[in-house]
Amino acid sequence: MATLSHKRPQSAPARGHRKSASESVARMSGEDPAKVSGRIDEEIKKDLSRQKEARKREVKVMLLGQAESGKSTLQKQFQLFYASRSLDVERLSWVPVVYFNIIKAIRMILAEVDHESSLHIPNEPLSLPEVQQDLNSIRIRLLPLLALESTLASELSGGITLSGGRTGAYVRSGWQALVAPTWTIGPDLKKPEAPNRTREVTTLVARTLTFAVDDIDTLWTHETIRYYIQRRTIRLDDCAAFFLDNIQRIGEPEYSPTNDDILHVRLQTLGVMEHSFPITLSGRTYDWKLYDVGGAVRVFPYLFTLI
Ligand SMILES: Nc1nc2c(ncn2[C@@H]2O[C@H](COP(=O)(O)OP(=O)(O)O)[C@@H](O)[C@H]2O)c(=O)[nH]1
Ligand SMILES: [Mg+2]
Image (cartoon, rainbow, N blue to C red; front, side, top):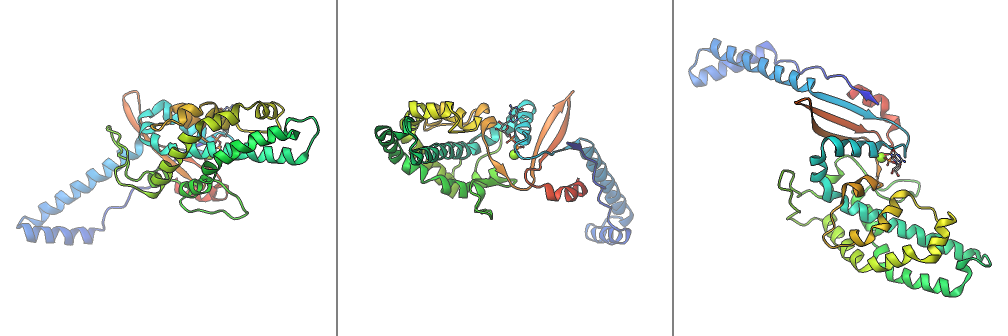
């Protein structure tokens, strides 16, 4: 992590330019050109002093570390602790990401079920035809939800596709504005009024999820799935288990992510994410800028020149 220095102030306009500008203003207003020039000088000085003051109150922190080292979690905890209001503002934009995490977890469980079934290991639960049949019938009922995974990933990623056959949702800085461009940012948080594609996809997933909640719960609590999770044949990260444990609450039509949900969300980031929020410490407000440098190791030298 590094605290960063201030940028050099913008230089004042060249004297010749200012002179001709003040002369034009004076000509139009009929004022004394010297007075106009003096006033412009004064305004430039005030502007520079305002900029200097703003820079003094700006704190820039870069979060560095390898993938999965906790950068995004630290940023969210920081925001939750010092600027929870800004987390409220973006709360609804996390809805499609929570849905995405859930669908991905279900797909991974079913993929592991397929794999284990194909091994035909004697005396294992998945070698029994009735268990396979039972799980298959749950899978069929979950197909409409599973089919929405790639559409949701594509919406979150804003159409980004990565080479090397990698799949998933990868977001860039500003993704929340793309996901919910019409959400009001202010004390009266409102839901979007104008429709947008991501919003429509999210609504479709929400409806499909509401109908699938009981089947997800049946799958998640199924004794065969429990058996393979305990044996660590099925490996899921903490976030997947957390969301599946809470599926009844998340499947509610008016679901809004809690702080805990937002902290558990897993979302891969591309490039540098800038998070900016005002923080008041000892009665003084500072403009904190946190840079989450997920997957941008090659641009470190460039970043240091920027900040
Ligand atoms: N036990 C523990 N897990 C953490 C901590 N911080 C993050 N994690 C988990 O580590 C994983 C990766 O975290 P994330 O913040 O996404 O890492 P990033 O890739 O560096 O942004 C997630 O599953 C988090 O829940 C921590 O302080 N303690
Ligand atoms: Mg991250």
